[in-house]
Amino acid sequence: MASKYSSFSEFYPFYLAEHSNRTCRRLHFAGSWLVLLILAMSVYTRNAMLLLLAPVAGYGFAWVGHFFFEHNRPATFKYPVYSLIGDWAMFRDILMGRVKI
Image (cartoon, rainbow, N blue to C red; front, side, top):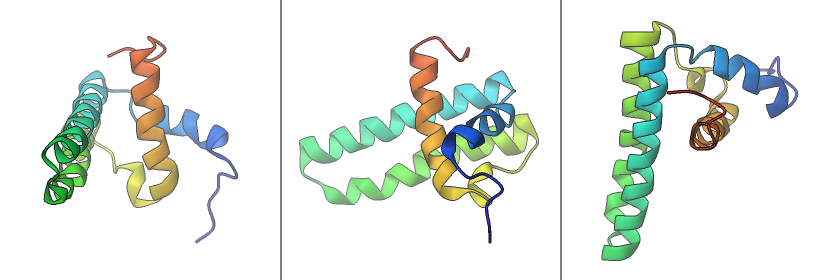
């Protein structure tokens, strides 16, 4: 399947538009923090099995945001790589105050 986006910089405005609902963005942000916490705990406890929780936490929060608040399909289904990059770009932009939550 060919992507209609030839670069992440072309994709990111679409990604942000798919996250116009404040609660959806907040859920994404919370899920990203939880993923980072799980990664840290996995290293701290030397328990690699904790890593199995990371995608559940990250995608779980995000998908609740999309299905119940944004009322759209997550971009992950059509653009999995760009969407994953977009999650972390939006997380960074929230931390930097470029995207409001």
